[in-house]
Image 1: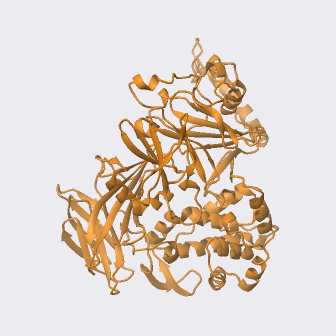
Image 2 (image 1 turned 120 degrees about the vertical axis):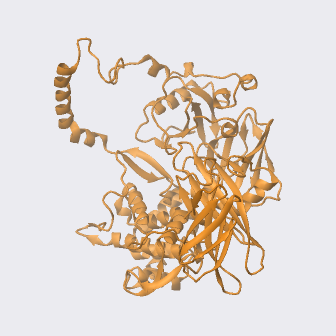
Image 3 (image 1 turned 135 degrees about the vertical axis):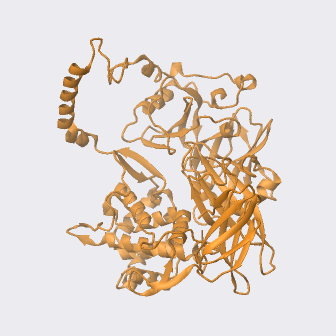
Amino acid sequence: MQSQDVAQRHAPSSAGASGPVVDVEQAEAALVEHYPRLVRLAYLVLPPSLGRSRRVLTAHALVQRALPRGRKQTSVIPAQSTGREGDPGYAYLRLQVLRTALEATRARKGRPRLSPLPPLLPQVWGLRLFPRSGGADELALDQRLSALSGPARAAYVLRGLEKLPDADIRRILTSAGIDHPESALAEANGVPAQDALLTSPEFDPCSLQARPTDLMRRRQHTKAALAAAAALAVCGALVALPGGGWGPDGAAAPVYAENPAAEAALDPGKLTRVAPTAWESAARTDFSVWPARGPLTGDKALLRRALAVWARPGETVRVSATPGTQTGAPPGPPQLLYAGEVDNARVAIFYDGLRIARYAEPKDGTAGAALDFARVDGATGAEASALVLGRADGNVRYLTAPWVRKAAERDLMKPESAAAPLTVTDGVTAPLASPALQPGTCTSWNVLQLTDASGTRLATDLGELIPAHLTAGRPGATGEASGAEGLRSWAPFACSLLTERSAGVRSVNAWAFANQPLPDGSGAAEWVCTRAETWRGDGTAALAQFRTPGGPAGAIVAKGTDVPACGPRDPHVLAGVLWKSRAGNWFLLAAGSRDTASIRATGGVTASGPGPLLLARAEQGAQAQLKGTLTDGTSISGLH
């Protein structure tokens, strides 16, 4: 739900001056769409003295608290948007994030002032989180920024990351409570402009590494409590246990005892290795029939290190997992899928029936080793056709399934262009540009196109081990997005996939549910719903998107999280938008799926009409709620 220059009303701002008030729903839509950029902005402005882990959590807290308060959150029909630069919701959030981040830089008794932050938002127990390490250039820039004052850091970031002119920077800093923005700009001029580095993973607090906290200190703090609990447990067991002696762990071995199954899981000689032709006669096509590939499948030293790290990763190992994925040791000897050199690393990939585990270490040692996990339970066919081997220099390499005949690279935003063939060697593709790594604005979206005996499929890298499967069509009757109609449906809305990065997404479907004639005679607007399904089941996201004829891309106008709408369980959707015609008139446009019998708008716009489309005159900034009735009499509400 975006807005370009509407859905605003003038009222006193929090600072006491008169200015635009942004609706809660409008600001929430901007926060959802631009959350990674806002968190990066907060992270760069916050004082480095906080430490990287606390700085990450603080940046997320600042952004999550940036929404307007004191306004009733209703289902608001948003105004059309052409992107971030014209979105007052984003401008409001950016100012709020800057204001609180700068407040955190002001000293109080020698420590950063963080009183505006909620004590429990967010909290991560037992882990330290920090962005991935960059190179020497990123480290040097971070050191230069740490020497600047908070306002100067803000000025540098607004100039380099947001591409704002100095006049706008002075206005924003003044609104954020800075008395002398000219001084901040002058101080920022002392650091050479390195705009590209500001978008690097070094400064991305949404792509994180995890490490344990001080385990020794935690043990010391709980030692007395554990001793008392143990004594109480022994006394209780003596009273409660029957003569045979049983407890909640049954026949499980004591903690830290040697266990044959656990030891077997660490033995490279007992790894499961599937025959190269097993998939040809298998009853199913999933990861269990992938053969072991790669030139290092016989390197027992590498495999032993990889299995040992999986069982008990050390403090220097970077561990990551898709949401809802366990990171514990394998229950028994896993299946080996790949072992070899990828770019500048040695890589080993395993499958334990529920998870893919990828171990990577530098070619010249084991310092900086990484361990990544992804859920793949129930994966078959398209979802088990490829996995990520590695990413480097903005590119990604895939390991493809043995049944894949051809691989190609396609720009999802150019449906008429032909796919570019990719060389595949022993299942490994040549590198292709990864949309998950692209900095700055979204101008292309390269996807992996795979062809096998059953057809052609598309998958996209969303920053995880398993690429997301792309489909198109009405929920419950979806088809592959590789067809001409699917490609046309996805092209204007490909950049919305940015909102699904690192969310554990299994598949994303695009459904063009309506076309609506515009009142100024300029053609028909397109309504599309994209729905992301996750491996864990919850966390699904349905986005209603709107695009006018000739527009470069669609705009997200409504979102539903963990709702059945636009999915196979509920193949219906209803959404609306405020739209300004060329003549300067404002209209409420609403659309539902084809089995919508009528639509009714209440609140700031009162209108109703039969069929799946509704058009009504409206005032700038009007708020409205939508209700629809299906042909079978069922009532539905609009996404908001």
